[in-house]
Image 1 (tube, rainbow, N blue to C red):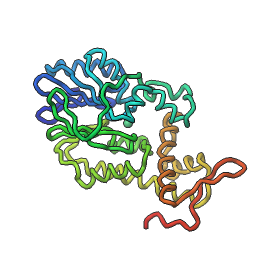
Image 2: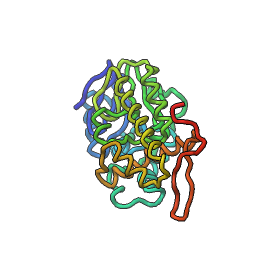
Image 3: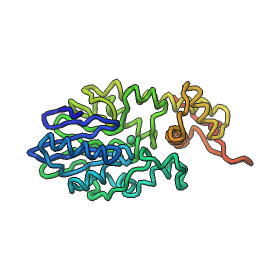
Image 4: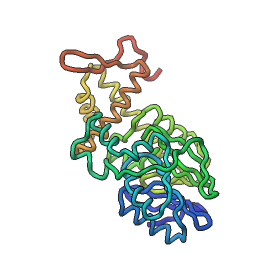
Length: 304
Ligand SMILES: [Zn+2]
């Protein structure tokens, strides 16, 4: 269902939200949804708004946000925009399941449309913090962490903020939110908590639009910090990666629902290990059975 948010901003709610900025009959679309059905719904929404789609901006290269881009581009002829790192994945979507599977070509369960989007040529690499489309001036807001070069788009009083945070129900359902760079994700969330973004409306990639993003950003930040503390706690005993993941799930009182959920959670746990290692708190060592993670003996405490 299409919902008006600001004077010229709208959201088409769905499994992943599609944003619209409409001025003088021209529309900029923020994210293209999962597949061609989402693209069809986006095209229909533009018709309802009496607007022609002039640009498709993809906030980050996850299949549920760009899977519909190629179909929407075909229908409208509109160019596709993305930041340069994310553009590489949108053009080569196998990279998403490939890195979920540790760099090898992915297994079947990682190649459904939720993790392997349709490829789409990106016409414009977004650089800098401003973008103009047919005279519509947009702010580009960097929101890294969930994905390496995720961006949000600001227009008038609305910020389309991609997957910088998830609704509380989603946090509870997934247990471990997906993140590729823990420190960047925490810094992005902290910027929301501190009110660094001067907007009246916030449209996330999933869930309802918000006027006050602070409680949900705080909850996301708290959850990532809690998981980091759990992982560091586990490493009081040197542990192998699978044991770290299994014990993290146990201590968070959650279960891995399926193969995809396991590999998504593993990425976040790896992001936590990389962050702790960068701070000099943990290290990885090899032994006759492979690799093991342990705390650094002389390392500083986590909360210093
Ligand atoms: Zn995402």
